[in-house]
Length: 359
Image 1 (spheres, helix red, strand yellow):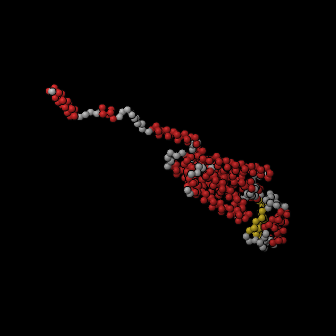
Image 2 (tube, rainbow, N blue to C red):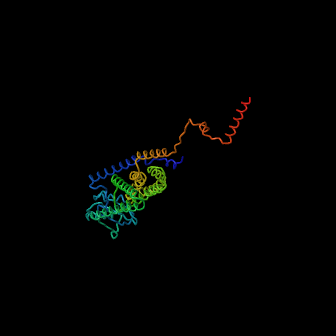
Image 3 (tube, helix red, strand yellow):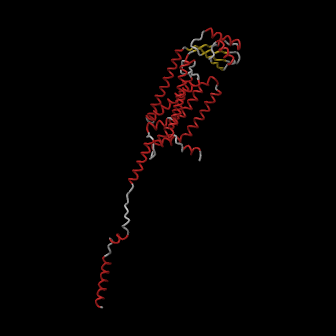
């Protein structure tokens, strides 16, 4: 038996409690990490300079700078959590995650780097991001995510039905909460690209879920006596290989960005990686069981329904009565001989009687 044939025998819907327990465990761990960060660091997530505010220093050097040496210089001045990124053209970008960076400290950083790599001060760029701008960016990002979820709910309600749309949106909420929990657990820094990563996650998760829901809708058109649970389970097993093949290729692409993309893309890639894994899991093991809960029957109701169908079939079967005593003899008694046969018998009897009298 091939692997595809084995998948068709899987009872995914029958293990709904296991899938929900796994998701609930991940959500609890993530929420615990968010609460811990809020108590210890004053923020539920590790907000970067784009949200919290700070300063960005871009320096153009005469030769390729060493990011580690520059990171040591910035740390010696008092900013140990600064991010140093190398850029093209012998440039280096220094991000200081602090709400107020004194101009004297910025001058010290520029002068120390100049001693090592001869900074072109005419191309030096210093950008300060106020906390107000960061909070406004976070607000706009939250509004963008909320609007995207509402549009998804509206579109799928028109394209399919409301229960399918509700299951899809709840699966998206699952992906968002799980991804945020993993980011909080690993203390991954969140900046402006984080919003783009989340919108990508929503798009991917919706696309994967719609494939499953579309297969369910197709099978509903030709539903026979199978229950809704069986129909959904069959739909999942038919698209399981397709979903996994797509997810595995996307996973390796995101993993390559995490490993080889450097610090500039690592945070974005990690967000994308967690979201892709959660989206693949939720489209098969969360959205479809939720649809069964919203629209289908419970297992006991399905068993009772099947038993009632069997009883109806038995009662509708034609009833044939058999009488063991009535064999061939009653049929012979009711058999009427033709008149000609009767007359010939009577004549033979009369001849027999007359011959007796003569004797």
